[in-house]
Length: 175
Image 1 (cartoon, rainbow, N blue to C red):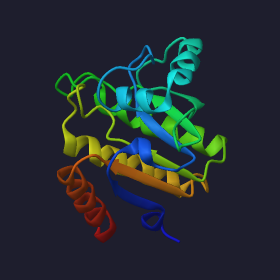
Image 2 (image 1 turned 45 degrees about the horizontal axis):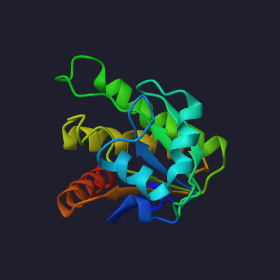
Image 3 (image 1 turned 90 degrees about the vertical axis):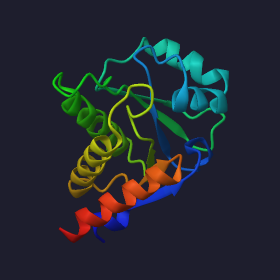
Image 4 (image 1 turned 120 degrees about the vertical axis):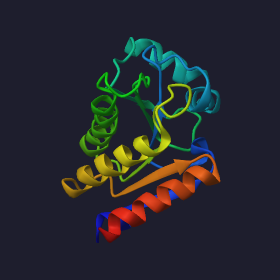
């Protein structure tokens, strides 16, 4: 089985996925907010906020895990992506770290399935194509070195993002 066989694309709401864990594009406070973060907190219920408060936050580029509470996912891996400031402030390294650390947690916990949203591309302003290239590259590298997770899903909220990930995955596979 190739790494390409272990990566899937999904068009829709990440909060509806029945996977071992979904990855939340969180803020450093881990207390919910807008976009995917707010949607995950709303769908998971108040228990998620309570558990996140006990974690005391998370630095940019790092990841933390909680229960999935009322989600179909068993767990939530919260990762804090960088705010785009033009690309000269270490944003790429921090974004790579988000994916690498989330994959490491999934490996340590022996999670079989993991779903990512497009970290940092919403209100944090990271350019979508650059972020998608980093996501695909880092996840693919991690899959080469680990049996877990067995399956990684890139959850795309709209058709344009789905087409972008599809194109980039096809280009990677053909190169």
